[in-house]
Image (cartoon, rainbow, N blue to C red; front, side):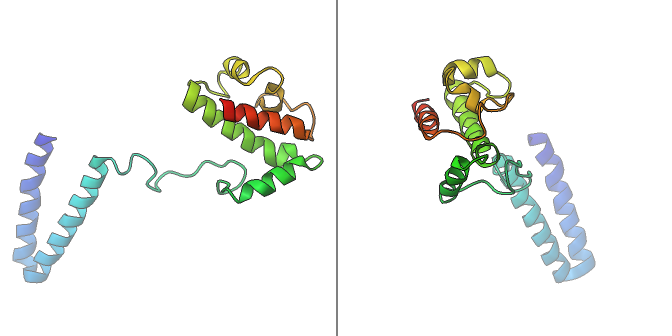
Length: 155
């Protein structure tokens, strides 16, 4: 990094000098604004502001174009309890929550380590969230949903 700065600083100073000689005060002001902007953006990148979610990455497509909020869960669960509603609305969201919890707390991937994930989730609940297999039914019983949520909370 020190080598880069020793090369870039004289180049920037030279460019600013040339802009000042050619354009006068407006050229000097434009050069200062451009160099300041580049310096700020570079400093922000180097400091790690772009390492999380800076808007440059595309969002992953889950079910829709946006992630569900707290207010959406009422409708997701309600739709998931309807006949044939578990597959389209509730199951993908439960799989997403289980994948996050298993990954964060246990270091296990729901999709690439299904045997470990099944052991943590439990044999009775695993068929309902197994990403490789269809669920036992297209409608989830309320007691199974309660058990899935309790197990998610316990993980």
